[in-house]
Amino acid sequence: MRELVVISGKGGTGKTCLTAAFASLAENTVLCDADVDAANLHLLMNPEIKKKTDFMGGSIAKIRNDDCTECGRCLELCKFEAISEEFVVDPISCEGCGVCVDLCPEQAIDFPVQKCGEWYISDTRYGPMVHARLGIAEENSGKLVSLVRQQARTVAEETGRDLILTDGPPGIGCPVIAAIGGATALVIVVEPTVSGLHDMERVADLAAHFKIPGLVCINKYDLNREMTREIEKVARKRNMNVVGRILFDSLFIEAMVEGKNILEYKENSEAAAGVRKVWDEIMHSPSMNLMGLKDFSAIIK
Amino acid sequence: MIISVASGKGGTGKTTVATNMASALGGGVRLLDCDVEEPNAHLFLHPEISRVEEVTTFIPKIDDDLCTGCKKCAEICRFRALTVVGGKVLVFPELCHSCGGCVEVCEEGAVGDGKRELGVVESGTAGDILFSHGKLRVGEAMSPPLIQKVRSVNINNGITIIDAPPGTSCPVIAAVKGADFVLMVTEPTPFGLHDLKLGVEAIKTLGIPCGLVINRSDIGDNGVREYAAEEDIPVLLEIPFDRKIAEAYSTGRLIIEVQPEWADKFRDLYNRIEKLASC
Image (cartoon, rainbow over all chains, first blue to last red; front, side):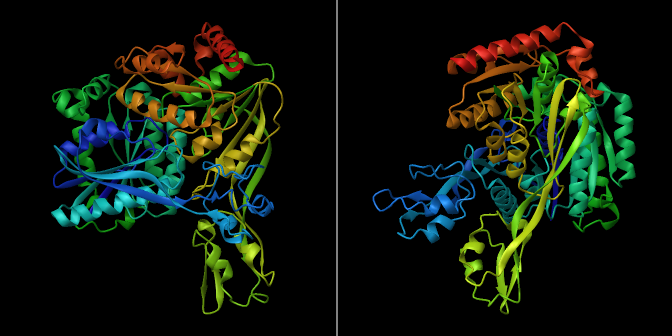
């Protein structure tokens, strides 16, 4: 089993548009949207939901005001300033540590488990897809990311598919850590800007920390060719294979408006040819070997 | 006056709007880059950093001589950051949420203060802009406490502009809570619209007034404008796509450096926000 995770560090570099295009080129694949916070892949996949499951995240404290004697112990204990002077818990600030619940002298605090979102197993024109929606302003996004990835793996095993294509979240924090651990390889989609380079370096540091091989794809490369060369230089220095450049083209947006990927929308465009070439390079890179064996020689430095 | 610049979707131009507005206003405006996972504002403002503060969070440190292996600390920990093996407590620092429950329940006083590094807050000036940003330590999962730290620097009565992280979950809430106004930056595409809706829902839970900047306003479709009209969200500025702006951005330059006429538009943007926030 191989899992390719598409990430970027910086948001908006084209992860989802590329993942959707890769989906139409990949064979025997399960799609996975691990950007549970602002998921977009479904907008290009039109998934037909087959199974919907509640995601039960952490618990949140709830004071039973009838039993509360307003002794103030919970206020004293809460490190997250989640309890008001009127002894009401702010569900957004509550971390779900349960310390007030356990130590309330009157045992007047309940700790109901919260539904923090939903996750789905769907069918798409390119095969099964596992995706999710985290509730608004919720925590536990890392937990939900781990869950969708694990479910994608189960679906792949059950349906005899040997590749999982995962659209990852931006950043380097909790959801990204949950999205990359144990991946066969990462595709880092970078735009040729100072922020693109800066953010690629941070996410490469993270991937190096977890000892994962990385491949770099420059999107919108013609926006700044000099920066493109600079990014490729940095990538190689850090032991990341450069798998290609993709043209800055408004066709990507036009395709998105139609709910299509670039290959469906304009098969013969230069942008589409660029995407195909990148996919070819990815699948022929040693890190994506058929056995899915970890390519230690390609670990990011 | 605290304005948080947020977006839902990444890469829509939060940093562009925050840095250009700050530069156009000048005069002691404070810019706080709270996208601590991937801070970028410094790449455009080039601040001179004069203060670096290491930010840590509490984690338990067990005094084995005092510990009796009673397991109370492990029992109260909802995050499984403590476990007892063979009468000895093991701590998993990266799982700890710093709730302090273990300290409270330990009857032997065996749980002391340890710390885990979250990152750094760097502060300085960029011209007459007061600048601070947070940089999350690579490998650290929890950004909200660091964001709160960035927000706690030198709150004054002037104008504070916060560059928020993308998304709709806890880091965004940490960067937006308590602001007087949230400026949502979006692009008029299906992805932009989808994530804008999520972002607006998140802001609604906090009850803060918000307005919209539409970046690359001449691409995509009309969905964002229709949504804004339906929801009564004022569109405060539209920035059309301009290859020159995009190329300037790629080298770390501000719009107002390459097209100075934009300075007035960003000042005007602020003035409109000020009016909306006060009513």
